[in-house]
Length: 168
Image (cartoon, rainbow, N blue to C red):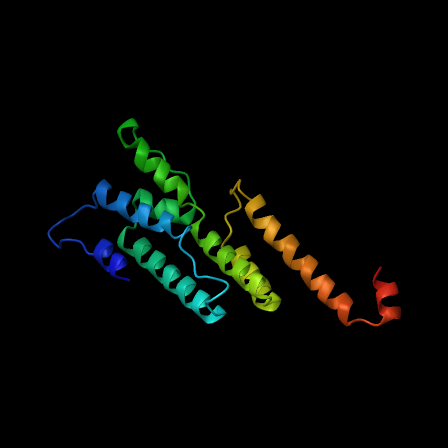
């Protein structure tokens, strides 16, 4: 929260958003991919709170930096910057699917906790946010396959012999 407040604050006399500030925000958002709650120690409500807070931060970044490369990157659109800003362009491309990745992280956490219904709900949420131009869909398909496999196993355990034969 402190990091978000520091990064969102802009001098009121400043009429433009500097590339340095946008680069700092992009780096902060990129770090979210490595910072997630523990599936062993944190309950699902903690995962949900963190995911919701990060979505809130993203929405505020989009409002504050409308019509900038950061806004385009968060929405998953292509970004073309001049050669001087190649590093910034690479950073922004790294966060282009951050909203989807937040839902997938939470779905994976719920899956590891055995909360298959919650995992399914988060995967459905990501499908609403998914960018059809995304080329990294294998990161998305694998959690869905694992979830559906575990749900099927669970259904099979609870079925009687005749239901298992029918299912097979």
